Amino acid sequence: LRKLSRNERFIGPAAHLAEMGAKYDALLGGIEMCLRFQNVEGDEESFELAKILKENSSSDATEKITGLERDHKLFPAVEEVVKKVQA
Image (cartoon, rainbow, N blue to C red; front, top):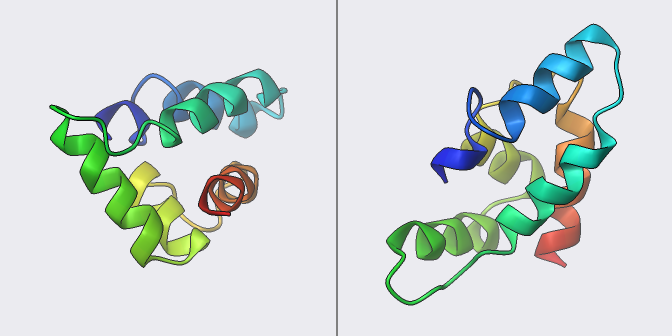
């Protein structure tokens, strides 16, 4: 979960690019792969991630996992990735 938080490896750079009006599409694939890392034996955070994705709407899950505000430029794109993973 930490890697998907607001100022970490994936969301941080993507948010920065979105704020600058630059393309961030390549990072969305990495974000999706991180979101798919669920219920892995020996990794408690992967179980927590699965629970958040199962028990929350896509917008609530996006906010809880990433720490992005709903009005952030990146939020809609990440929410679409979350919806895809939740499906």
